Image 1 (cartoon, helix red, strand yellow):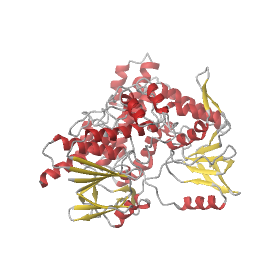
Image 2 (cartoon, helix red, strand yellow):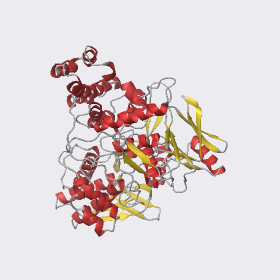
Image 3 (cartoon, rainbow, N blue to C red):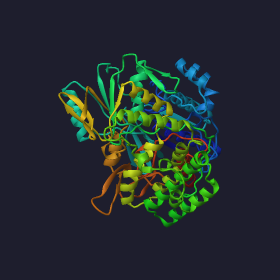
Image 4 (cartoon, rainbow, N blue to C red):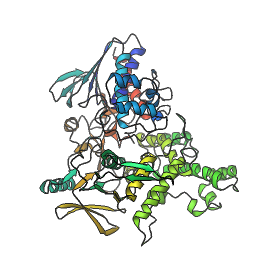
Length: 616
């Protein structure tokens, strides 16, 4: 059997691991050849060991592993291996020294604790070790070829596939597994305008991209930089422009951080439509595999929805939000309201959440408020927004430090993370109408969920507060507007149009959007042109059809769908470009939680070996 994996990031590599495990599980299997393609080599574009060392992950070290485990609800052979923290305590030191990596990594692994956030570069080294370990574990009847080249074309040849690269080179394989990451897109009308303006006025305009790659060396302390976006890329770019320039943070007696500038920092002005930086990730208190159990959105309830083939978003959201609120109030009552009988409160809440809270003595300011969480704006007409933001960032950091098991708000938001499986089941099984999916899920929930659950470690929010206080970073009120004026970029908030800032640099602080029809990837263009791949099309009851950004795949098998929505045997496609058919595809694999990436990789490989056994 001859198979191609396109993409050598985490998803491509766990596919490789599953292929090795399944091949070795049966000695009678015929020889297996695997061609692994990625122009950036092992780790792909994002996880380079040479990226700036100040960039850190947003998941605790003990919660990231590329190894398959017994918690995964997809039957397959298990070859155990360590998570990042365990690896740092075992094989990492020798691997780092043997391969002449920076001594910074030796210092990092020496001081790394289970709930610390490893640098992204260290995860890149872990991935390199993981690949080397797979090569060592592979039996003699497995051949693995790493091709540092770009696949530009896949053509069907009877019941096989022809792979063409940019070298050029051509090979014939029996199966293809595409595991691509974020793909760059053609410029939008607005981006073309800014790009042309930057060229004409000798300014810098940076398109959506990857913070580890963004060229910043030419930016000086005399420049003002606009960052559009307040998500993870924003925090990375701020870190590179401050800590990466030699700036330091000092912990004061009151517990807050103070920024000590070294004079190389530019002035940073940042904002977004929402206007609030992503919530801090709660300090982890959970043991590996520990997750909150649902009381409302239970497995039994999801089974009913799937049997019926549909559910309204409102019904689904009501159950999910009640689970979040139940966890919040359980901790809040236990800690702050000793006169309330917790058991009675919980039983009453399970029967009627709204009435139970309304009849309780819980103060209005302590009650869970989704609207306020999504838009924390409490500024009074003449109140200084900087003071409001400083207070918000301080409270956000304090809440996050209370932990994922004891902090009422932090633990409640962790429920959204723990209950990702039913959300994925909702999307994978297409239980929502296209109207519900477009308006309520994509238009509202997806943005809110990202804002509340995939934010940075607490330290980054503390650092941001110090940078705002030191006037290194200025955060705009909600409603960010970016324009041009007097041969410079200009930005301001629509809520405060009189306060405007001119800048020499505009950076789109986000990764490229998932949008297959505008992707510049030659492979995606070829697949779409030949109808081997097709975009997901949604059909709301009113208006025209909507072309979603996702590449359309069968959500269960992950086989590419042709223009008639028929699965194409042998052509598997999964990962970030399917975000829309699937949900939250960029998350790193986690051990002991029936992780979706580990499960999907095993399902794909299991299907390949099943088909191969039938053919033979």
